[in-house]
Image 1 (tube, rainbow over the protein chains, first blue to last red):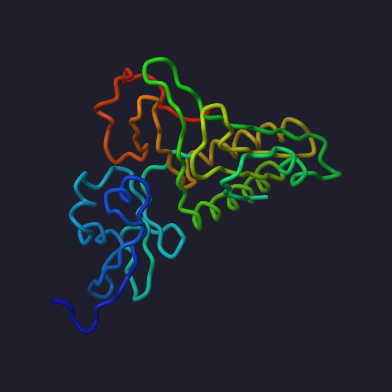
Image 2: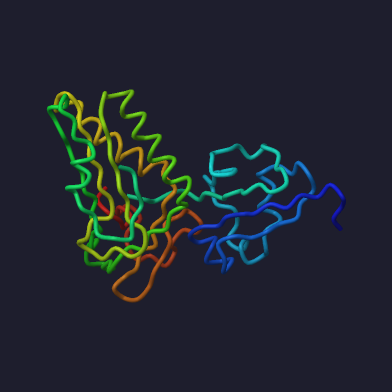
Length: 86
Length: 154
């Protein structure tokens, strides 16, 4: 698999997802214009073991974005789980 | 002043940062890691931030507080381990009058808890730990379902 139009993106992981992955970032090769929300299904199985939590949000290059936003080569996506700061 | 830090929080720096000769009122809030009762005492909270976006959101909150309340807001959040009894977050707000200073401070800490990408890992005195990030419900948590979640303050 993989084609000429593939893009490389970095996925940032935090908290439980980072623990599950054993790393805080995962590099993925995806078809061009893959939507942000589809990144989840490409992550390694151990990261997905607990299922995608309700209320997850996405950031693209350090700004909030929507799941439908198309990815471009070199993008950095973050899966932002429900926050608990304070 | 907007920051994430591994060091103990110092309120003096925040108060100085919101100092303004036209502002007659300053309110400050400290959120402190709680022991959280006797069922399963908490030993510490380990905070993790998505630093780039957390700082951007904190700056946005400070800017919005300026628009809404005419306030200057400073906020610092700890990252890493914060032992029980230590502050994990500090917010200061100054405004021309006290009502706006109180309101801005309250609003800013509420917004911070709602939208700044920072997560708690609660470390229990019994050696267990759990992330509070919505990924899995703590089925092993012996606390009653209605009990407030472990954490600083609220």
